[in-house]
Image (cartoon, rainbow, N blue to C red; front, side):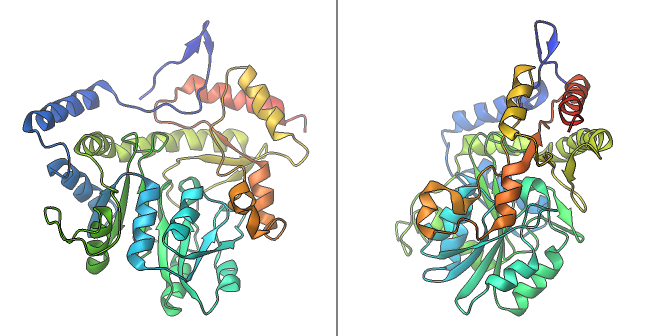
Length: 378
């Protein structure tokens, strides 16, 4: 799966590179030709095929394709009707997680995170739960599922709290014998351009709940009872995925296991070479390896570290995340600075190393040697 990336005969490392090799491109083009010849470019057989494939891979009954991962989260929140209720969400997440709660009329209650997983832990969830709490979102940051997932799922069931998985980073991730998407009442996935599986823009809801699946499909399509009816029962908008996006997404998804296996070889090499050099954030079990996360020594300046690497041809990918949600300017009115100290610390100190499905051995080794040379003096 290797490809070369060189500049003036020197190895350079981009933050990511999406893989669509010749065979996949030919398959996509043939399916696109068939789609365009049919004249049906929306709500057709390709969307249904992608939904079925993804639900099966997640070991769930239903897949509902939509326009983005953020749309998937919003559909779930609206389908569960969190209006006026508290929803537990980690502050270390992408803003779409929190936006979905607010757009659905809910009240986000921010959770601090566990530095070992960059995600939530059960004790923090218990501390922040109120009589008004109806749902909780667990985000599988970077593809890492907390080993507490079975306990979190059991506790949510005991407390009658709806568990939602933000699995945007975690296709194929597993813990406790279950895949991402199997623990909650519903899960949301993203197929944005940076993800392990991409169609450029897109998302997916998965669930085992028949009634919830029906509501999600209704909300996905202007609140209509069924695709070709004009009766609208819920106030909603258009969150649909096109046939063209579905064709690309399915072709990429069919290589998911291959992508994860290759990324794992890169991750294993990083771990072997950098253990003891950086503080590593590693999965308990199977990860999608969307990100490879590590902490710099406290005395190192992260911006300078990134800048130095960029000068020598290595561009680090974005963090997960550099600024927690409660410190984002748009949420300044919540006045929570200093109240979620672990998140503020891990967000400010971590980095993500390049890891993508076409990364060459030369790029991996160059990244390792460069990181070691910069960090070891500290």
